[in-house]
Structures are given as C-alpha cells and as structure tokens.
Image 1: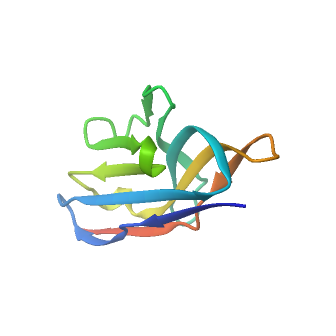
Image 2: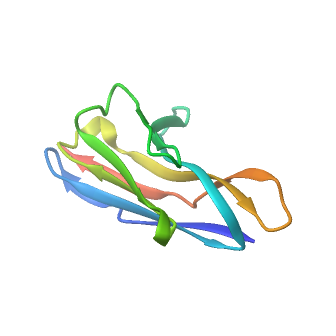
Length: 120
C-alpha cells in the first residue's frame, strides 16, 4: 500500500513564503513523476508544478518565477517552495505521484491535501 503525506500548508500574508512537502511511503518499487495540484473553491483542480524522475520540470504560467518544485529521491519526497504568494494562490494543494508498487502497475496516487491561505 502506498501513501502520500503532505505537510507545510498554512496561513500567510501576501508576499510571504511557504514550503510544502510530500513524502511517499509503502511498498514502492519506483517513483516516476511527482507534482503538485491545487483546487480553489468553485474551481477545477489544476496543475501547479511537476517534476519527472529525471528532473525535468513543468509549471503553470501563473506560478512561474515564484514557485519551485524539487525532490529528494532518497527520501521519496517532493517539495514546493512558494514565494511571493498572492491571495489568488489560496487553495487546497494536493501532492500527486506516479508510482510502481510491488505487485502492481504504475499508478497515480494523491495526498490528502493541505490548505494554503494567503491574506491580502
């Protein structure tokens, strides 16, 4: 069984910073891409940033030059450093990872979500 556990959300003033973490655990053979999505009230879930196992990254236009995704493969952890936060960044942030577990095919997994609130 595979789990993704997020941490690091909270309340911050506009212009501030937060760092999200997401650790994978379980019977993992290989972790492929890892990334972060967010969902604001009344809106669809959207990709924020993603990173392949080889280190290639992809960012939503709205967060480029403000957010940075990174990962520590030894710790099975992905991070999202969020700087210059804006009220429109307020959302529940979800970790996502494509993982091959023992006895299973590659499959997408989601974390439970962590709330990020940016006050103006």
